Image (cartoon, rainbow, N blue to C red; front, side, top):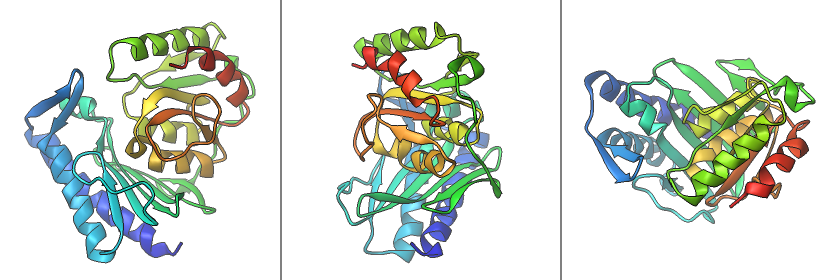
Length: 261
């Protein structure tokens, strides 16, 4: 991997961030895909901004995005894009959302860039190059017990069985005397919080590739471990996700595997 893909990812994230910042200031009409699953012109416009930058530099690369670009995950040179991760936060004027852009080559994550345009926070990872938060190298926490740490969790759009499974998993985690469980509503940033050591672990029972494609590389390059929520290797498909500092992985799996849908 050359530095060119990283440079393009940053340029594309900045372009999308400009779109989101404008809509965040000026307001935007939200629409429902289904219950609690929102989309807006900001999402779509931001994804087009990302695609425009990528295609200007890499016309032959494939793009898989949440809103408008549906390339195969088997493409040799693949960009996986969430133009607005945390749409519900965005809709409610909560400045905790991000652009998430990952570059995969032959199925392996090579570059991950996550950008919150409101706080101007940059999370950048390259395979073998470590993880950087605003230019400073970061590492996962060194906690070895669940009762020493905070845990992150994500809720599904599904308000039925999947939600009940998530609540059961949270209950089991809390009973293990963690310091607390937090749900901030932005999977990409949750994974980054594992990488920066703020969370000892994070889990969610259902995510799409664009939700975790960049964040998983950030967490891994910061020294963490990322699998599905049963402990299996993480591919590039709709799946559950579990990320930890490594030390806490087995203890977390003991708590959440029994409730996995």
